Picture 1 (cartoon, rainbow, N blue to C red):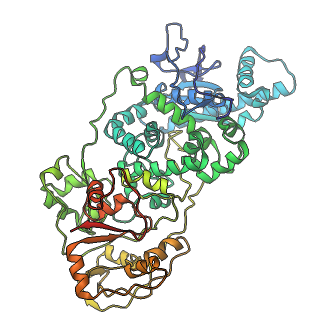
Picture 2: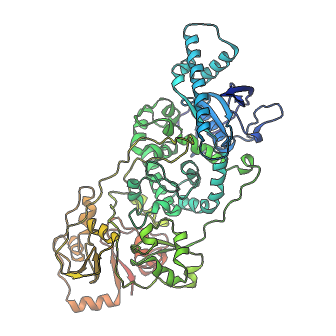
Length: 629
């Protein structure tokens, strides 16, 4: 970090001035903050002065606080921990240390604005726009200034010099307090924060990244922005498909733990690319490409990035994102300081995790473990309607959360389901990755991806009109389904709406079927045939992955022997060999965890079968691993 950066903040004491405004016949007591931010009742002393936190912000080498953004962090600290929902601050949207006033809303009680409150906010904002415009005119023409004018001008001079005043009338913004919302988010965080910290730690990342959901969603599990970002970690659909399952049956963005694993993978990639946590965290809102451009201009001097970078979509939300994270970390990390009334944290998440080996309906899983389908649906927030009501099967590889203790009480996976199988749409596969990233995520059971995408946030900046970054998601092109091969068709029952959707978007066929199975695709049941000699051509988005997956076992053997295809063993010998040992051939992009979970083993069991060391995670495409005997 550049020398201009600082690791600590020393809040300055400020004075408040109280005035009374008459607005629309309604007399309100308002706070005219000519000297600084207003505050909540728990932050006032008898004289009306401001009482700063006793120990300031926590210092951290990972999360420095450049001096340029100290006022921004202090502003968001007030929003999260001091100003209540019945208070509105009017401020400059570039220099957040310039607060015009903090007023109390008339008849405040709900999260949203009433029509009369909207009118009140508009009138106060217009008042401050006119006032700043008049001050700019007086300064420009060297006219005499009143005492209040001089105090306001001094605030602009401290924030950025006299030039900071020019154009300020176009930058007046209102921000409602979020203290009650943030406190409720802290209560919910008791359920998930421990798991989030374990995810970050397993990925080799700072545990305090677990505070990000306070900025993104206030820990609301069903949060959804107007742009389509969803869940506690607020992934856009296109970005979500890169890091997790997102289809019409399962949407992992709504599962707090699975989406935390996706967030860890994204943040790890961003940090590897950008080289600092201020840039990487900001990229969660603005995108890695945008922050790479900012880094190219200003290096790791994040204070200069915030002050000077003029990227097309680097607006209020992106400029303040890292400051909001620091403020959330301060408030959530010091609950007794900001919430002396106490925080009733929910009990930590303690469910058992099952990864399905085969596709099956939810009620089949519920019967096996002796629980109700409704109770399972309550634990599995990522199941969509078709999975919840039995119109579609849960795909193989789906995570199922079970009541704690279920897997010790009932041993083994649910038996294979012999009924009709409905599958979800095919998902795009990863493009490229590094061995280091792949190993980092085996512990959390996630697929390493190197592709980067912009995203949008559901953070609430103004209750009546949430502002969202304008950057559209940019992802790698989605893989197209492989061409169908001709097979015999058997008649089945009339197609359902879910099956018809699958017919229009058929899943790509596996490159090497090992057993003959029956599949239902719309209203056609296709009997599995022998492996085709020529597999589907890879898509442009993933040439190496598609080509590698199209190889058969014989082709892998050929590559090892210098390009000459190995002769297939006699059928009887193959059967005898497979009866003795069950072998899995490692495919590109597979990790030790994926191989283990896909074959019903733990990572430790898989290592033991293959005589691997307790910390050995190295596997390579084409390698044969024992997965049973």
